[in-house]
Image 1 (cartoon, rainbow, N blue to C red):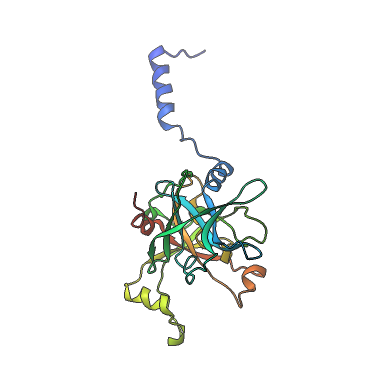
Image 2 (image 1 turned 90 degrees about the vertical axis):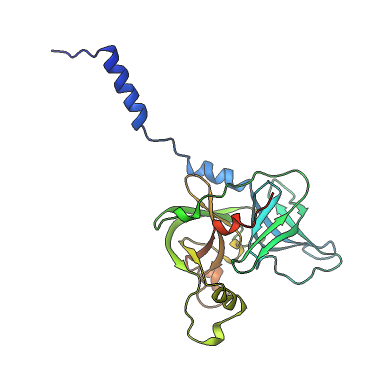
Length: 254
C-alpha cells in the first residue's frame, strides 16, 4: 500500500528541510586565494643597494584598504638613509611592484603597527572576534616565511589553535628580561593565541585567520625557535604565537 502526502504536508516538510539544512561553507583553497590578495611584503628600498629591496616582514591590508597591519618589531629599524625608503612589495607575475608606505601608529606593548599607503586601495581583510577563538579551531597563516629568498610569493600554513596562554611567561634568570618583556609585565600582561603550525621568522606580521571564513583572528608575532637562529629554517618547532585581533581594532582609524 502506497502513501500519499497532501500538498500542505509536503510544503511543511520542504520548509523544515530549509531550516535545518547546514549553511554553505567556503572551500579552504578559495579562502586562501581571497586572503592572498591582501598580503604584502614589508621592506626597505634603496636604488644604490644590491639587492635593492631588503625584506623585513609580512603585512596585510586592513581597515579602509589603505592601511597595512604588521608587527612593531618588523618596522622598528633605525632612521632610514637618504636614499632608502620604507615600502611594501606586491607579489605578481614577473617584476615585483613596490609602493611607498609610512608609519601611522605603533603599539609596542602588543608588538603591532599600522602603516598607511597612498593611491588606489587594496582588498582589506575582515577582522573577526578574537574573543571567540577556541582550542582546536582550524586556522591558517599566510605570509613570506623565508623572506624574499624564494621570491615575493605568499605561502600558507594550516594548523590549529593549541592554547590561549598568557604572554608573560616565567623566566629562569633576570638576564632573560629584555625591554619588551619588562614592558609587558608593567602593562599587566595579556593572553596570546598559541598555534600548532609551521611558521618561520619571515612570517612575522602574517594574518592568522579562520580556515573557513577567512576572518583575521590574530597577527603572528613570535616563533618558538629550538637552538640557534639557523634552526628556525632547518628544524622549525611548529609552535607559534599570535596577538589577538582585538588589539588591532583599537589601532585602526579611518
